[in-house]
Image 1 (cartoon, rainbow, N blue to C red):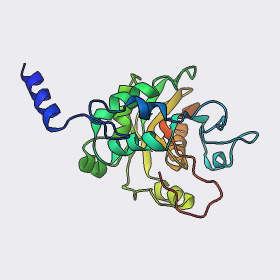
Image 2 (tube, rainbow, N blue to C red):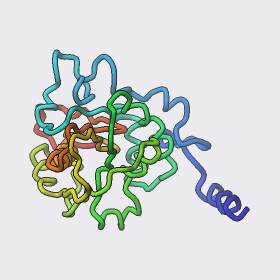
Image 3 (cartoon, rainbow, N blue to C red):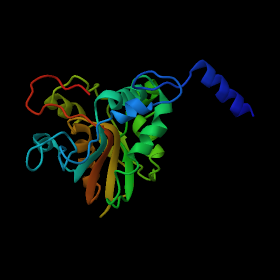
Length: 234
């Protein structure tokens, strides 16, 4: 009864609103849900899930290393971007169950042995109060059995950085201290994959620990322009 009363008070003070348009009563209304752009199927890169109408893999894949591929649910635009930003920057944790449920099917057929949330530095967790990737992993109903991957160095925020800056920013930032992963297929779970610099760096660490294959799994894929000299937003 106490929990129900507390929940009612929270709902009264902080009513649920659509992350896309602000409509009350749900975290994502039917109209915004219908406008989400899938990151699978025709017009997407078969390796990294980015927008691509050409043959083979898209040019963005050339910068990803140590990965078997990246699977994402939606393009990082519109309501999908709003959901990612609501969770990560506005601490709107109510969107996590819906986002995790949407992600749950993207690991189908991969025979994942262990799932790892892309780690945050302890200072970032203290600032934000949670790791959004851990929330999504749990809400996707995947087994949270990947322990030991840590971010050992605080890195700069990557929004607005060029590809090279992002790669330099995360170089050497991760360490694995868990049990050996000999012959295992593992997954790295994150809210969004943009250049792939972070998941590639994590993949290299897990491969050094014996992982046979590493997949990137994300809610959103940011299809940045592969030839632009502009800083990359996500």
